[in-house]
Length: 348
Image (cartoon, rainbow, N blue to C red; front, side, top):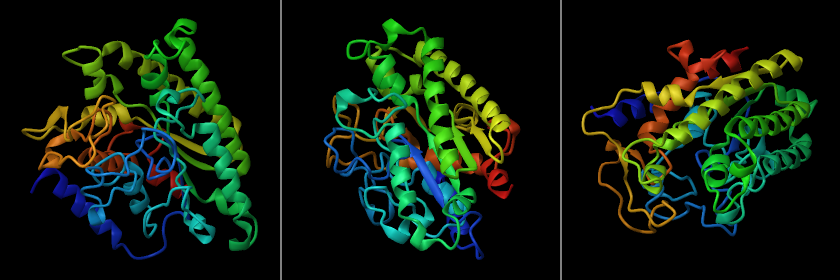
């Protein structure tokens, strides 16, 4: 049995677990790693609503997911026992929102200017504003307090990559690197991040899973753009600083905010520790990429997506997304989560 096949069987098995879901809804915030179609109608080159994206998604549909199949949050939604996948904010209407909404946007960051060179995007503060718009329409569908309903939901967030790859480490487009040291920039990012998490708290969020950034210096795009033969250490070191400050933020908010339970998912540790099957390609791209390292439209991808870590220059394939989500949900080690995994978080 191949690497992907094993995890797909697990995923399918979870789909048929009977009983109530672990939470009534799942709200998702982030960038292209979590985007499921919010960018489709934006004026931006950062969109994935064309083949070969989605080639392994049910029906081989290019929905706007920047991968060949399921995203990390698709898998988490399934593991929560929620039927169906969470819709993007752009298409979720009325009672759809009771199950949750996905607000993530490709090229979006914590800072408003991050990703601007690619076109429009929905940065974190705008995503939180969109969540407020969702909440304002929920009352007709909820018996009792909307806030208490939201207290039971899972909030998942993964953002910050574009603040580095489409801001700090692009000094030809953005001034950030000339203004901030890596430590100062990480502090500024995490401060803004914390403010938005506190807004979500005021809306009713109590169970929040925050994903740390992965090894973005090891993406095929960054290796090629930096004329490197291996991972770009300067980028990865900046990411480590950000992740460390994010862990501190989680601890501080857990101590400060009454009734909140926030956990940190160490994406970097999860993906570094993952076993690499024979012939697995961790530096190449499954699809033919254009100059911005997204897939060339309508060009057939690699025939076996289970052998590639990356679909394009930045985005992982389903074969990476599935075990990452599995580990975040049921962590076999405290190394990968702080303080608890998602399953424990939603059970508290």
